[in-house]
Image (cartoon, rainbow, N blue to C red; front, side):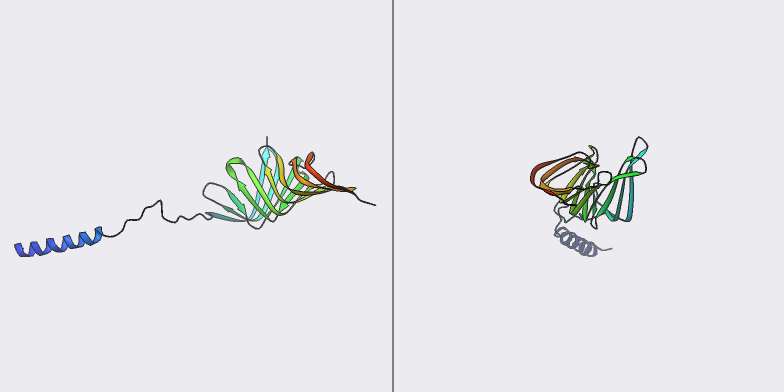
Length: 179
């Protein structure tokens, strides 16, 4: 190849390299990242045990899991609590749920109901937290508790997860039911 050919080839390479360098590099930290679910499970059925004894059954039509392990139940969920294996003592259900895996904390929202099947008592509220590690449920929202002979309303509640022993933070009404 002649010197003229090498100069021409060098000039083409310089031109190509200079246009390639003009391309704007994108900062990966400023790129839009996907934050949606990485897994979606249907017809979820989860069992939780303690010392090899079945204590909780959770059912949900849909569960979405995210990168950190947190989950969402966009179509709601139903939980059954047991004192002895196989004997359901209370239930909890809601229209929507969220699980914070690192804290083992569940958040229920929308027509939340907790039923104590043994005492025949029902809790109704719009939002409720379930701390699975501490086996507690709580809310600061309005609550309505229906027992066999009265209705109690209030603001805020603290209870064990089986809804056996509870405290209403601020009672706003007590109504006796006539039989």
